Image 1: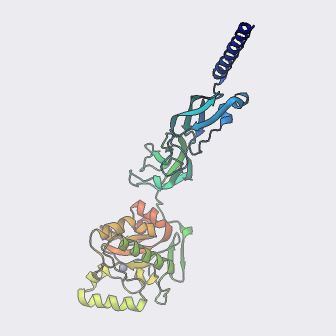
Image 2 (image 1 turned 180 degrees about the vertical axis):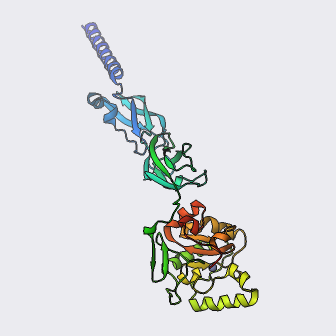
Length: 373
Ligand SMILES: [Zn+2]
């Protein structure tokens, strides 16, 4: 009797043990990940939940699930990861047996950069330098940063025509977007457009620009004072030069009345004789300073600016403020004056085009000039 009981207990225990082993084996066997690879777009934060990793029925039998994504590296100072492939782990327990499974997280940048500035048509006067800077017309943006590449090999800067250039924006993960842009190389007008010239109250305008040279004077009663916009711009230019360490004075010589120019000119004639005075000083009524749009820049030592690197900076940047260097070197027979690197004339936005053309105001507008009155 006793023996029978012992055998029964042993048999039941064995059966129970077998059943337990089978259950544990079965559960371990079936705990596979629902998904073992996840892809995220660059710029998005990575989040993985247990519901994405396991089937619902598996979840019921799992304990202490811990998802470990510490291998994912964030972009510096950002809340989203760097582009890459990361091995991550999930730890959990089944029937008190610790287990772990690995899964992959891929972070990809598939988004192309976008143009935030795109100029469809660019007009350039013929004869412009061949290393023309097109980048000013385009801008691209992307989360990872974007570069602009321009293929302008097809443009012949000397032959007026329409050309197509290829503008490419590339982000730092090589996503690329390309667009075409038309470059119109235009003829410099060979004859002055009559419509765009007008004479009002003794003032001579060409394409909206007031012309003062030895062929075009101003009435003695024309006294506009300093042009407010031009004055602001010259002070901005001076401040920027000073900030960059150039020796440039706050004192400039701007607006001059007819009578003040008369006294200046007569003084020069008395000292140098008329022929010499006419090379650098205007007769009253023929000075650009009477327009309120012309300014002579001065060195901090009080003289008119003739020093390097100041002169070079003015030559290269005046147009950014709406000015042109009015009397360049070697153009005395056209402008009527010897080189004056300090004398700036305000023309507004068109300054850039005039600067890029490399022409004097007279040549650019095709208006008469020269050394004789
Ligand atoms: Zn001047």
